[in-house]
Length: 315
Image (cartoon, rainbow, N blue to C red; front, side, top):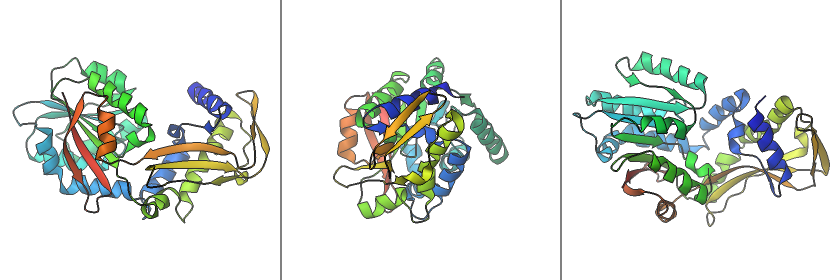
């Protein structure tokens, strides 16, 4: 049993308002559901960022300011299946750049799968898989003198508050040297008509994804959630620019969780927040970066201006 999961569920269900970190979406079932979400016609972020890497990889390399005579480390935080990154890797190999690709992930199985895939597709690529906490691994990599380019894609930064984002980016910078780069993928602010269906699709996939969090509590912590008594209710306004996902209790109810040894009360209409997804523009990102050691040097967007990859320089 994951003790941290247990602690975070107890804390999250004890506070007002209730919330549980979105990282707990991802068990085996959650992983499979998220793959379905990424393939939904309503879910634009993955396709939009892939377009940037597919069509603008030369501009990305130019903004990275690397050259073929100097070895560098290309470090990806949470590489996943590497679909987008492969477009950049292919271009770098074709251009005879000398680099190590360092995917960092908490999941060893995910790294092993990615490593096998890359070995098959890019036999000459130097891959240095690193399992563990992002900052723990970055600390060890800091000891070599190679220039570094960090990839943090998929608008994963959007799951943090602006204050948390500033702290996270600052910590990345603390493990880098002047002139190192961070490529930050972010979802851009746009209309409710475009954003909300990505979090509340008509096929019910995002609903199942959110409700699976309650199933995970039932399965791993001995919870007694009746999923039929909760409604999936995302919220988003263009003025705030933050998509929020909630599970709303349809009745007054008491939920015992055996492994925690407590019963948690829900009132009818009470919300359990399962995710935030911040959307960005230049002004918002500038305010976040004011508290870090990074500055924007380039910005690449997809053809519909849905998504952006910012190239940040450590000063």
